[in-house]
Length: 387
Image 1 (cartoon, one colour):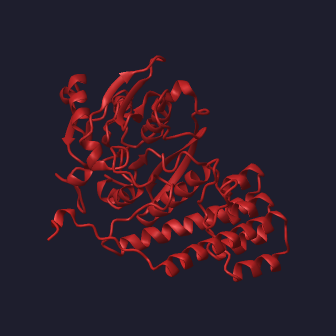
Image 2: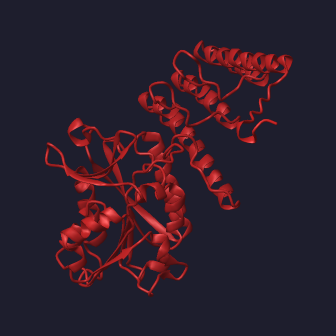
Image 3: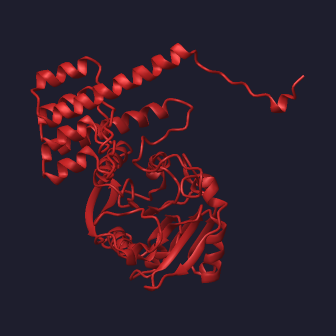
């Protein structure tokens, strides 16, 4: 008898069935190419509709450039065709070989109508996925490339990240960097260039607050400590400053910097999910300012956090913000998730004011050898308050 450990089960389709699959794929490819070429040749809408009804796949991307039928429709700036394709289920967030979406193409032509059609299709799609995932016991996944691809490394898995070693360094430009190494690639967890964003965030969270003489602050995710240092540097130091941090290397870094000895500062070692429940933060604390910036958590977890905000707030004057890096390597993805986060905050009774912060174009001096997690020139800063 063959050893079960070495048994190989080889299941093959019958030759005829395998050939049928290949022939079917070839037919779909031909139909997909025909549809894209017909769009680029600006065939009349009835002709294009007929091609679609005859089975041309709307998900197909051509071999030459990786463009889809929606890309092609955006290229020729045909609003009616874009509307038809979206209604029939064209993939709103597919990217070509240059990493451009159909929405990016519309933006390049300054075609606001087509861009809005594609962006709104993305919002509807992501909201539907979010709703479906909340109704099942399955873990939700973000569609395609919006936030991150399936990734079991420290850059895409919270548990793996928490067991990864962090490096705290200073680059040749004097920029502080907190990073991890993922299969030989440096991944920035937090970088010094974010300081301008954090400074404006603290100003909008704290300035003019009715409790600015005795602010109680909750921050989730210490990172390099940029925002916590800024909180401590406000005109009146917070009377209570709670920091939730889970990574052991960050906690050790905080000890070395003396954060455990700072007056009014309380450090909770663990994930925010370990301390926050339906009744709010364990211990009954409430806060005037809440901020969160976690690494390796997807949008599902941020959305989940939103639901606890009313219980964490000390009153109607409380303010909330988060590091808005959602899909921030693509302008349309960023726009879609900015709208989605606003809708989800509205559902828990919070209204958001957005401010644009200029962070400049991506530069080598800013990123060095690190993978970029924010490559847009403008950061959209959210400040949310109870309605």
